[in-house]
Image (cartoon, rainbow, N blue to C red; front, side, top):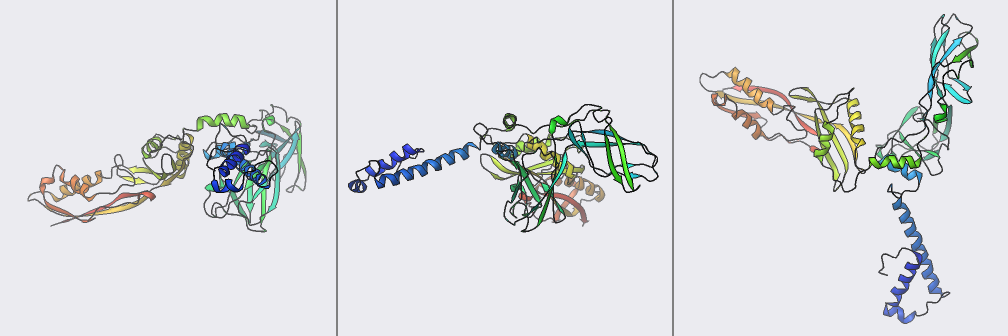
Length: 475
């Protein structure tokens, strides 16, 4: 069978029969291709299997592209792969004034978690506020929703997952606690490191929200029999944005241990609640993803990534002074790019950047990245180089003056304005800057006893030469 374009039952069947007819040995013993013959039945079965395989392949390929994707889960996964922040349902929130009719109380009261039904909606106050002694009112912030908790059991398998159902679960409200440790969410569990306490969430075609753990190598997997506690807030989304005075006259009560009795407070909201949104629909998400994608044939170069990173300037964290992009796996498209960054502490000294700046820079790079690129932002590794110079000054020349000039010349090789990260230091460059000094003719001779050769660096770990001490010995 040589028709590699045969992809449906009829075409595959015809191609199989043609292959038999064109083979003299087979054609000599098989000439009856009428329906019902055992050989034809077997050919039909093979053609049917081929048809199913081709259909499955076509379906899976179509789920990789926004133009042909059909499943909601696939759209979510494409969004995750390019770093698009998927809008989940968010809970409306607002300030609610509690007025205590029986106040002032002797002891201060610490409020517990409170719930109430107002305007046909469930509302929750997380607790923790304190009513001061002799105070009669307390401002509290309430969220629209019902706090839920599910206790499950780990089975020790890779990529264990749990179905949290189709309810609107407020963004950022999921908490996972296993064996006393709080696990954190990651966009894709495949991006988690070895044994990290991470999990991911995703929705399937039926709208169920799934929570999934790792396989040890990409995120830790819960061991068999361990208890898993998952908490989350179920919200109504946008319908929780109610107007002012909706809470007015409603009451909330709880047992105050400090008083040994039940306390009742009247509720009121002078301002509307706000911030509630529904989860984004699949069609809206697909439309929003289009500007985030880039043509697959667009190449990625270290130079344009570095230019982009150096253009970033955050109002809170500032900017990086130096950038080095290393393409760890690249062909037409760079798949994995590590961006090394450094800050400047003075004209000749670099240092590591703040965690906040690195996180903000990563978010900035992800906004305009090409579909298949994975960025990480890391600190450089500094390799301190100390210089030892042995020299003789010409008759009448000032050794102190020559030391100052030579120090300035060596420092120029480490000037933040011109230095490049992860670049080797050539000893010939050091000799060159000394020979170009205005006072170079006042040196009878000089030699570097340290270093005595080029200083190499490991580009893959962002190793960068840093200026140490400079010492002089005069003959």
